Image (tube, rainbow, N blue to C red; front, side, top):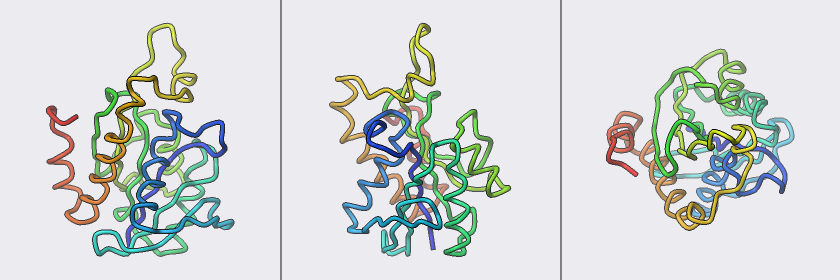
Length: 191
């Protein structure tokens, strides 16, 4: 059993914001693979289970705010008896230019509060991450305001392709594993 979690903030005010790109990818995966996401009150998330790349997969979007995402992830791994190595967390990343994808098998939160919450709740950093580049704010702009803002017009035109690539990388993680996924998506030329 595999678990793919898209991080974001709940509520219509955060739809299509930079911070919610992880949840946008999981929502797109659920639609494409016809996995209905239903409210799971115990886990504080929308979750659904189905086959992707012939792997039994749980897709989830936490209903907690970003900095409390670990609560939902922790509940899901207990419910489905999933090992941390079989988890892929999809989240935005300020340190990557817009449109860039990077895959990691483990590591620190790098300042991302959602990832930090998952590490704290699991007591482990041994889970995979799909980091999606959202770019950096200008020197005058506050980082918190930036991640909660919507994509600009030129970025919005590229969102379908960006989300499609993130979905492809998620499927590759399921089908071929983390190493092959890193080889393809972590190269400098990729974008």
